[in-house]
Image: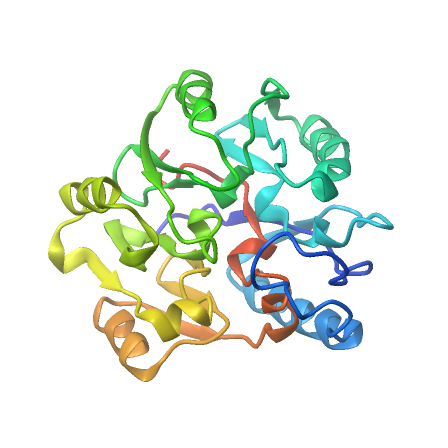
Length: 276
């Protein structure tokens, strides 16, 4: 095991609410969440993660309810970061706050052309064994961003296309795990993307997430070493993860699911790649 603890960026949910709809999960949940419960659930997640990683925070900002989802701040590779440029107009005011945080914390920052949509580590995930990054497109990140990611990070990009609007970022349905395992929901991707995944990840390393587990955001998990933190998983899925050597931590995050996010969305791992 590495003696260096992961660093994770989170943002307190002081101003979190659901008052607009930018993904299918939000529809019907406007005004339906409890801020007190959301704060308690966020604290529980932070506390659980803090046992295994160093959690740092960025200050929340009024009128930016989705800033709590720090996975979308940008993508990180060693001391470099690529700032997000959000597709939904509602989230664009978050951008200067995250950019300033990266600069203040010593990252070499790359800003994409404003014509290119890119939503950070929601759509850019480091494989936990291979020297490449899985990068999504189809809804919130545009494939034009992939060339710039590959050039700036100097790393191979494997492009995978989302086809189900309920899974609008790849981190909602795709979670690379320690030692090259992969927890994912295949129906969220097109044929060519599933072929790319299956070509790189051998069958014994693929952990399939079914429709019910995917709907509970089981793939939107935080992996630290042999630990997997998630909202909820079925007994068969937990058994499969345990068989692969993982310890599963279920942490209720119902209020964040109402906005289309869960454990992974609430975090940005700052120590990437894992094999550096």
